[in-house]
Image (cartoon, rainbow, N blue to C red; front, side, top):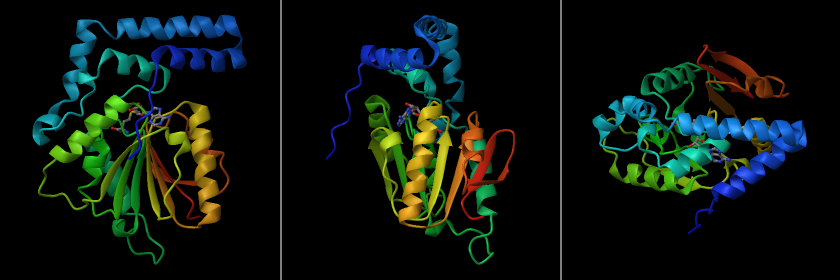
Length: 253
Ligand SMILES: C[S@@+](CC[C@H](N)C(=O)[O-])C[C@H]1O[C@@H](n2cnc3c(N)ncnc32)[C@H](O)[C@@H]1O
């Protein structure tokens, strides 16, 4: 079994600063670092912490722990340097997957989830893995960097009970998604702002390499697509749907 990576706050902050300093100089990188730390302090006030529990309805319904309200300070601080944990809202998730289900598959009939592996890169406490299991995917994989969130995801997977669950082949992995080797199945790739631009570029480069080696259909659901241009500029991927909340890309052009 893999042992989860050990992640130190100081080392993470140092790597973040070095990367920023290489692009924008030490002074601006230091100013931005102070900004990140200040934002963390502001985000730690009792009011802000309480507000994070506002998304706990899903947890009440299914007796799981996926809210961003119960994340330890250390993981919140690490999140400021990678990408802060925030779970996808159920209504938004089902809207995205239902839209995906309307897409024509190879024979022009609606896309058959049974052929596809669903992958969430940056899966946090695993809420999307649970929600995706209500659809008949071939299998479901979540990849999360922070060990504490990954462990909670594993416990949620054990805990989750829902009569409408259709997929039971679910795996949560603790590793850097930028180094994740994609399985050779047709894929539905889910991204909810897991990385900065360099990470998104790396993931898309990995995906393309995997597609060259094993051609197969891929659909990418990009929720809150702040770095959408990285995918739009990427030859071989086409935006085929979406709203202001998400974009849907595919290689089936
Ligand atoms: C905005 S949250 C999304 C959580 C989940 N996908 C969802 O939609 O409910 C982004 C997650 O990406 C994780 N993350 C950040 N960098 C990562 C990396 N390099 N590899 C894997 N996970 C990462 C963060 O720890 C965080 O849990």
